[in-house]
Image (cartoon, rainbow, N blue to C red; front, side, top):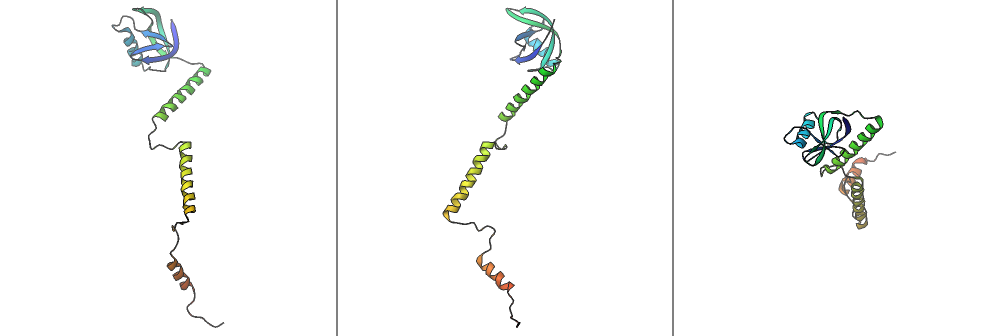
Length: 154
């Protein structure tokens, strides 16, 4: 019997859409199933097709797996799956953003506002920046240099 679903791996146990997976005849059937899947490159949130039969391990209902392969998805389901993974990765990236990362829109606006407040306070105090301005003595010297020293008759 084949089953197709999303694989969930947690604390060494694997589930396919909520059904525990196991390997028949193993000392620890639940861990053996997880190792079997991992050995074939499958992990949490992968869509898989497993082959096997229903059974019991102690008092637990399980699906004993004998084979696994990547599930082929219909187009609509595949698009949903891709969108879900993109959203999930985006949330993880936001959590992992370093402190020096680009500011969010709200933080950038707040910084812009504080800069505007500083400028308004400076204007209110009446002090002006001298940045880029020449001292008065240099201006006067330049004016004298541009005037002709001797006057000629016209």
